[in-house]
Length: 374
Image (cartoon, rainbow, N blue to C red; front, top):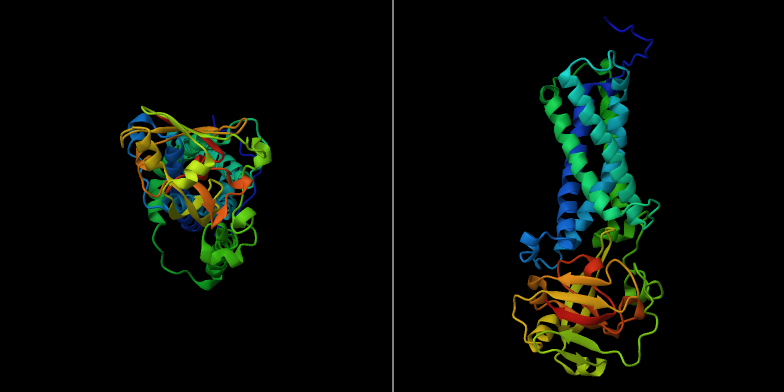
């Protein structure tokens, strides 16, 4: 028995036609895939599975800066694209009957998973760039699994709509101007312009040559103590006052302790490395200190050793971190004592902090008190 058709609105604009949706979908799909791949890379660097742990690359030195910058840039670009895509296809909500076949039901399921997960993913991701956590669940883990749900919804949607997408993928023969072609081109041009605008006015937090246009990004990478931004302050970490008898403890086959003066008496090395954070901002600095590899070797540990690093922080999710062997033996990885020729500011980890190439900022432990060979 057929359901009676309720009174539904009609849509005649070419802006709601499949060709428009496919064009926007291509742009949105590209942004989502870049965002997914770079986000997965960031997650693996922060929380590597056991089988990958000993194979994480420490080079290129700017690798995380580039990938996480792309992650946030593509995520922000996806916001106007997703809005335009939803506006283009929303008349589908008024189709009747609402479900016509198994294939149609799969299509709708894919759309529901994709739209719901992407709205939540982009919303929480945008607030993460502002470090504004208004939800009770852990951001990083939730963001990670939502990305997989969004990817699954995208693949299901593409599979269900494959023939229609293929039919409108290539440019069709131009229609007469009176049939709305100019309107569609203007709409697509406006979307492209909006994506370019939000990109160039926010990407400066990770792309140095766009810094002058950095109008709406949540961070200016050149503002902060010693010209570097700060996520977690010494006051928040409870490290505003460092004990006068501070010593670095190195635990290994031959354990030892070093005062700050003794560390300064060791061979000092310099490295030009960025601090690159998950929020998308990054800033380069010239760091000077003792190579982690030298400290590990002095403790009698092999090159294959991993490290557990403990901070003076009173509390926090990254008070204790682990460093894989590939980073620990890299000559660019330092226990930094100075930055840009100055003694570390308390906000940047005085008396000593870790700085390593191709490593998330949250793992560049500040206020280091202990290195333990694993």
